[in-house]
Length: 256
Image (tube, rainbow, N blue to C red; front, side, top):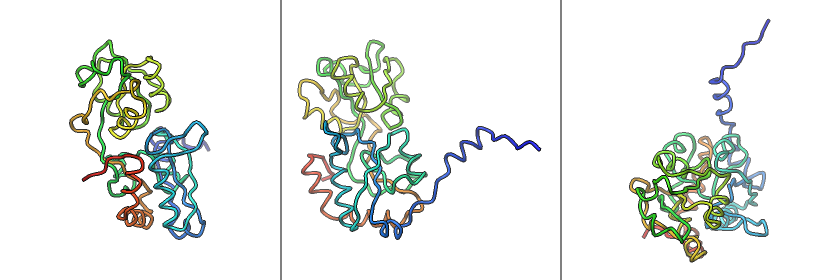
């Protein structure tokens, strides 16, 4: 008797189904909190020239682990794979630049807002003065670079209709394309734009200073829906002073 073939829809459902998250008791007993990070988003979480992860969310993760009496193990992921890897229970919490979106809120447990944010444009400084609005950016002669899988791609796909779009592997390649003048501009978050504008003066400049209309958002941490106990522990910890002290260290704007 022939076995019935799986339809594409069935396959999609199977691969989108979540594996049950490690319960809080199991996390505690293991002695390790697994934290998933793409690791390409300064100043929240990125890899330095020595291959070491650093940034605000790396410090936050280590401080969270200390508060829970757990060792932190960082698991590298990517923006296209982030949700799928969390759903597969490859790590307990996703950090490193996760934007709160309705889609993520429907599928996962999101913490209270941590860092306010919004979409801006950062450009090679030689052309940044000519790209101060979405209308100026969305022209055929403008080369816009974007990486897959995150909210930057969603914004570009929804709003950019005429500019030449260069699609690259990750956020590191985005920035290098601007430095090398292979691209003119990229859409990114206010947090990241602030950082690179300060770190690389004369090379990377914020073409727009305030977020585009309708893009206000917040960075959060993300766990599986059935991990309510872990989410509650993280939210309780976020009510303390650690996030404020570390924001001052990394020069990140928090709400007044």
